[in-house]
Length: 409
Image (tube, rainbow, N blue to C red; front, side, top):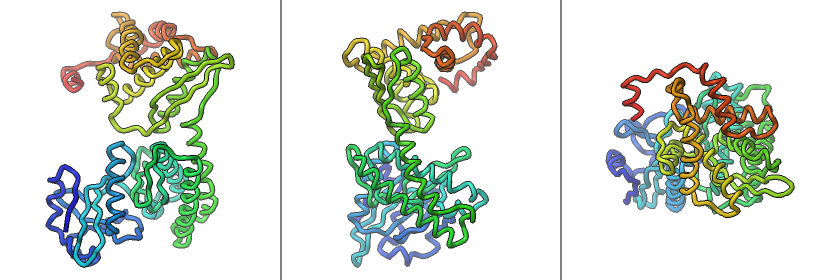
């Protein structure tokens, strides 16, 4: 037999004593765990524990195991929502299939488990929205799933809603980008599979009577198109609206759980045309990117807001100069011409009420509010003056202790 495990190799060491030479179905029950949240699989799937961690073991043909191993490794490296793969055992005796090993996704549940719980009445709408968001994330990354379904998805509670994770990548394909036809086919497959799964739940009396499985499934394509359009469409607006309209669009995309890459702004006599490259957000990446570009150490949400403003400023520079502006040049100019002058505008008697990055964020919010009310972009410095005069004096002074300073540093 041969084993292929990702680093750190020490994590897999405790698994090497398992009876890999035997079919999974014949493994001793003492070696396995019963996971109540598990879903239904067309393969033999078992769970085991080693060194305090739980792993899922799936018996599958070696070419499919290698394909899934490679894709799941890519997905994890790029921050795509999927289970984390550990390794493969292959060349097993008697022409047995390979075993793919993935890390168990803690606090996750299958759709069948969710429908058997107390929140079953709210589950169909929530799970459908979550599944659609997962499909859009994958399509943005050039991933054709080919088997999108509730059964191939795990759901983890997330502040009153759920986050969806891809579990099965056997049929998935990776492309530079997906054509509308390829995306539509993936969505249609999802609609069919979700309908069949919900009908199966209804037959087992796990679905509330007032929920129509076909109606719920048929709503999936419309929900997908609405979300896809929101994160990918171009917008046209008046030239004098461009600053706050760009910020408004970027904020909407972020609120949907997506990140913003390149921003292209083209102006003409008809107005300004905005194209935004949307991508999947990776936890913690905003802080790292801001440090790389500016050296600023801030919190994650603050970093996201500052990066969005930096990108808007770069788009403005490129539009004004009529040529591309290097990212590092734009970052340096934004830091010295925009960020630092704004945070240094706080009068000494009002200093310490907000962290600099939080003050900058508040000014951006205040600018959007003033611009929305005025019907045109009022500009940063009008927002700074208004905020310092009317809002900041009412903000409680922040209490800074040695322990807080130590934690921040």
